[in-house]
Image (cartoon, rainbow, N blue to C red; front, side, top):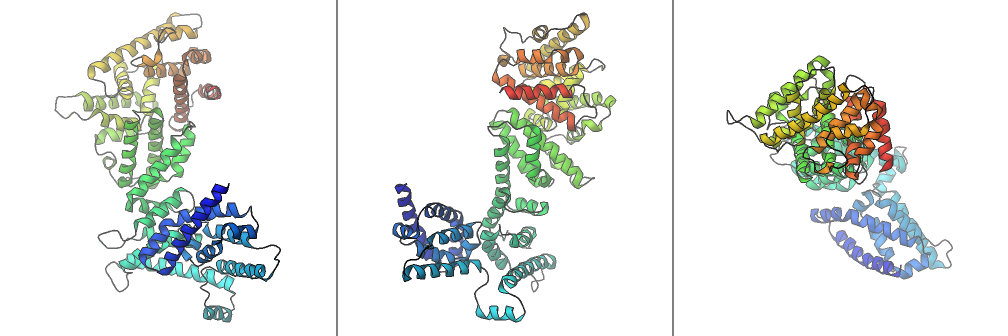
Length: 563
């Protein structure tokens, strides 16, 4: 504890020197330096309060002899008083110096001096000008009523001038000078979290001058973005879009902030991921192609860095769902061609993938799946015209709309449909192993088709109920096999899980079969992810309500309770 006090005493001297330097001049450089250190100084005030509240006033003065000088200088710095919670911590520190039982005139004078500082803080932005006080009283206002109204009028006046500057274009007589706008943005840096300044913050974000370069300072964008991400301010979507369009580092930080929530130690459900994504306003902002391209590029990098981690894959698909939903809500007819959002792939393929499975009649889904498979195959494998594109680009587009791959797996296992097996198998093989060669993909397809044939044969040739072990053996993933080493193990397991959910015989032994399958933690988490994704898709993207939804939900809850 003594070491903490020594450290705080040293910090006192450091900040006292800083405050003295800030007091000596009011240049733009001094203001920038003040704004740069505001978060650190607020944290120092908080730590100081935690130390002071455990002492009496005499002990405080003994351990921190310069504390009064430091707090007095702090009270005269409007930037500090306006920043976040600094004023609150300052008041608490001053209250700790008050001697509850003054023993002599010195204690009484100290108390009186502290009360004076507190009064000064509580009248912040009142300027303490005698003439203004007399003027406000003459109008019948008390200072407590007058000054907030004055501040509100000043803010509204500035907002009005910014709007006029935007509307008047090159009419320089009615336009706010760029230098003044730049200076205003610098002054606003420590004020962005104050409710009274929200209209001004919004007005500056939506202000567009006619200068060739950005006039608002980067520190302003950074402060607003930080406050928005930490929920210290609320901004309308157009203001947020303008912020991210004008300052891409803020957009990148917003994406990293979202990634930190999505990819955490706690495995979030897709419903929870969807809440995080929608709350971030990123899908709504991504309706502007420039923002979408930055966001999508960061998802691309995350997939490459994690070697296609299931969590990143799922987050990409949920984000795409939220983005398309926002796009449809914003404009029924696209203001931008869909190719603008996905410039590196076939526009016709993107248009087909964009169709919701829920909006596609049941009888048309197989045709669309076959068409998607054919278009992807031509893009990836057709060398005839020498226009073969990077397989990753085609796969990256495809995984945005992963519900089509899930639907392909279901169609292979539903006995009432006559599925184009080769087209659906190719689609699944490409989804799970996009960088395979044509020969490797053909081998995967042959192995999966053999598994499907064995499952169908078991269902058709038996009059007695199936057992979980027989089904597991039919997949080639029996007790003697290592499922994690299978070339297409994940694909086969997901087909097997679909089989358990879609066929009546599979549903009766689903619990036993999943218990046998979940032989490692890695596969257990894989099954949890599959069930969660299946339920999410059934809720949002399918027109029918599968009978196995209740079973899938129960299985998911049981597995989550085990890990």
